[in-house]
Amino acid sequence: MRIGFIIGSLSEKSINRRLFYGLREVIGERAELVELPIGELPVYNRDLDDRFPDSALEFKRGLGDIDGLIIATPEYNRSMPAALKNALEWGSRPGGQNAFPGIPVGIIGASSGRLGTALSQHQLREVLAYLDMPTLGQPEFYYTFDAADFDPETGAVGNATLYRRLGDWATAFFDHVEKNARETERP
Image (cartoon, rainbow, N blue to C red; front, side):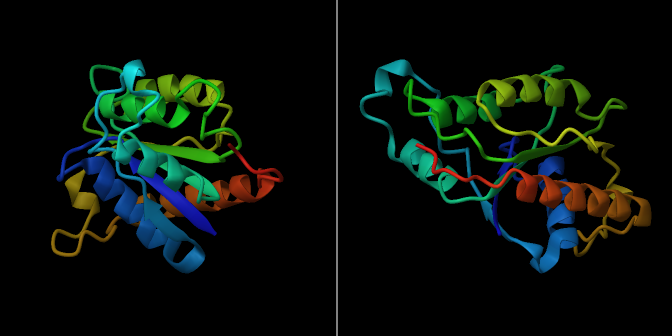
């Protein structure tokens, strides 16, 4: 199984990247994980629909070559990050050439706040529904980041409860991907 992943933060020190790496550790050999980078995408501009930048073409090609998608999103100002929304714009444009329909998707998120990324994920779910992506509903995964949950030298998950939560989420996600396996090719 080939699973794409998007880290919604552009920060090299992103806590969502650290959370995803913990999930990657839990997933192990169950899937090939392929990052779909969003940092090189220019701000979406409809004027470029007829001459897509190479970074946007590469992003869309990556979407066409996966069985499922994991999005690790932060929450900025009680909303999804602009870079993540921008990637969704590029992947769904131009009109009639949306690359997202049918891709099973799951969302995780880490924040330093007590609500985790609940509001960001809520907004993201609305956009993913519009993009016609079957989205894992349960279990939801909101995490208030604590550096103590990770080994400071290796970055491995050192908290048994977090490791178990990630494992439960991963199991549900893979069940979701299998249940929603695409029977037809996407545009």
